[in-house]
Image 1 (cartoon, rainbow, N blue to C red):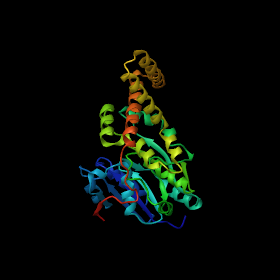
Image 2: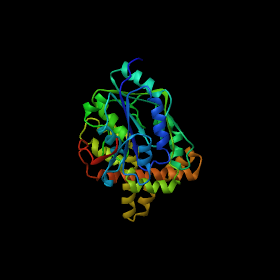
Image 3: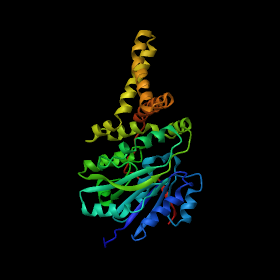
Image 4: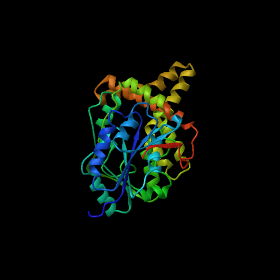
Length: 329
């Protein structure tokens, strides 16, 4: 491959001082033969993430309003300062695998109907339930072949993003890659996950219940409802609903259980409570642990409650850029 296209890299960060240097080093090593720009899109980190990125020679841009913090705003912020033909999306706790860029660029240059491409993911040993569960389901979360979205990021054709108006939705506390994928497919593009290594991910080290609390207070768990709000009235709403069907079904069930409880009809409550008991047993058998089974049900319950909360959140125009500033260029 003689021609080397210009690649802008968006690294979204919030307090990633432990990993950001390794992230930038892994990217720069793979882009040495490409004209490129490495952008750290920071959501007002309170540690020294920004300074470490500056010391590594990255372009650092930052939000100015902490209320704008969410997963969806990060790469959109990076996109606003990007240039070139391709966009590589990474998080500040990832390391880019050797050889991914060459093979991803070759694929996109040969397959113009594809807007984005990703690869396989490697995760470290997790210490909390959420990331242990994610590691067990890694092949389901990051399935090979054509897909409706590329979880974890990927290499995207910049012209495709320009066609659909924006990269990631600033309203979303998660599911930003899912919403991006739905819009790209609706515009007639395809997405592919190749059987090549893409990145190594460093898991959160918070204990299970501390992470649960953090996810709730940060707004992460209201993302399923936010996704549905943003997709309402769009051609892809049914696909968005399918993505969060487990949370939606469980939310409806919890509402029914609550109604049964407030009727003070013990027989009705017993009937309504039985499916929950059966679900706990099934999850216990599936996880081979009562504790993990209970944690699985608790995670789903919190996500379902978050879905309801997310449905009530006001939505801002995703085409309106967040307030930001250049820290270092």
